[in-house]
Image (tube, rainbow, N blue to C red; front, side):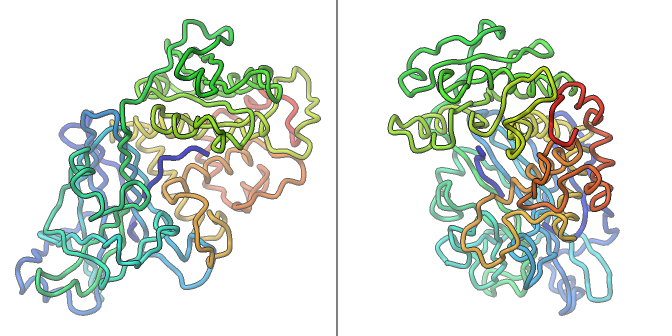
Length: 475
């Protein structure tokens, strides 16, 4: 699964409009406190008492102009447990944001006293985890926020941070270590002399700064598969095709159409992509096109080990979502799917990630009043509830794992994919999901009924799916 990587508070957020609704996303708390505490005033600090909780959130996201830069941000919840599944112990995600440009993030914080009074905080201090402190190992950094007041450094009383190429260059090795380890930020009550008495939940950022500009795949026609030219050809990406929808051509790069029956399987992948794009409004297709994103179809899962260096080349030059010929099938006119009796067709999942990341999320960030902003807010809330309840356990049930297989910023995408397969009964008979309690529509309705309501609201009905894709084992 192709991810650029990254990465909470105990309250929910509502997406609300701001003055410039076309350029930022606003996410204030569920209820805005009527009282404000100025933490630069000692008497205001005393009002917190000793038993208080700090809540830190992203209030707004304003995309900037460098579209060859990306920021992934994950807000973590304060709801952590000492035992349980991996995500319950190492970090429950509450909100996820992905930009496909540099961006300015507005930050806000509240404090709730032991008596239950909630205050909006002014002049709060921002702290960052020292990436060399060892508070969170590099293997776990994307999945866990350390929340250790002895391992953080004071940044200052900031309510806005601009994350761009200049920030990436200036702060690499200080607030984060290149792209291997994210930047973990917290709010604390303290000053330049005294370390924070207590830290908030964490917000985690990953900045991706490719060495050059992202490339665009140009397609003259979508009705056939054509050969590529150098440098793609030299790196072993031999063919390309596309899907045309809503006036845009969305590309598909093919490693080798002659391997693993890839020609026939590409036809199925194109049908899946067409299904999503045709059932979502044109702004989703436009966003994917504007992001210069492409599906990348490799003949097997070992593509990252190819001697020709195709993995590094693709990572540095393209925005893409991968899919392997060995994990999908062909277009079948009948209900006979002999190659899916014991194998899950990954095309629906990986193409969904592609549409979600590059299409839906872009529109959610761009317009906080949009249907897609509401989509992402609802999905984040459902993901958090599913993790807390144990209906969904990303990275598995073993909380002692020393390395996270899945980045925390991808928890919502995977939850959506598991739910979609269950909703459409697209899993083979007898399939047991690795990280979800629900594999069939009946199980999803029983275990996670609000997710069924979500799917009913935003996706085509199961009847429409079965008409388009006959032959799936539980049809």
